[in-house]
Length: 307
Image 1 (cartoon, rainbow, N blue to C red):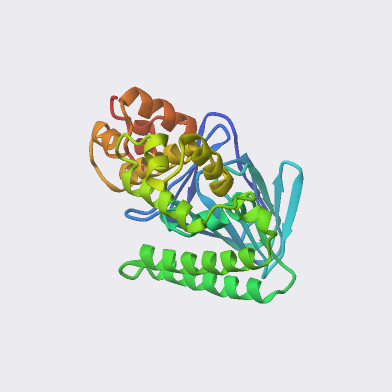
Image 2 (spheres, rainbow, N blue to C red):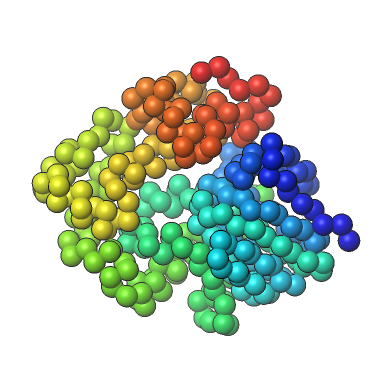
């Protein structure tokens, strides 16, 4: 049986029944159906995907055979009934031999990241999650994800939102398990500050990221000095204030580029970037392409818009 192979040079388009897999170097750009940010690829053929990464979360659900993931220094051999969840930006290689059958779920994490209690489990979200050993959690998550698969292929009205409802339930279960059993020090980096205060500060950022938002302004909102707030914010969220704010703005811009036809300069302002030069530079750092190139990839435009 022939094995499908994705090259890692130039821009490669691999045809699938309902879309393309687009690679540029090691960076993969997930193509979604219109008005959606969830993709599910079923497969029952041998395949090998060389090292690549993408901004989407990746979940694999093998039904038959073994899916082998290679991450830098760790190998996961995912059997039927097991689940592997890879965070965004995680470089990986995937090999599936003959007679393997699986569902590959990819989705943009932005809608989940805006929830107020997500910072409580940021440490969990930065690492691969491997559910195995025939546990109750594994069975519950598997059931939810298979309901999501069924919803995806039925394509009933509001199917994208319905898919995210299953993802929300999945991450709620995973988060509850993590907070129940993870060492306290891993949850918030040994941060002793009241989580409610930090969650309020993060909500403030999420509601004002499109403005000129400084560390001083958010620290004042939280009632702390700039230096102290900067330190506890990183302990609590796992990111610096600047990194969190930039990630939020890039996520907002990504959503607008995919789901609207607003001019790119207008999206720059709506996402809180001070200039087109900054927007292009930061977006390229996070997505390995400019905003107009990103829109061309996801919007099916033949020639990127001039910037």
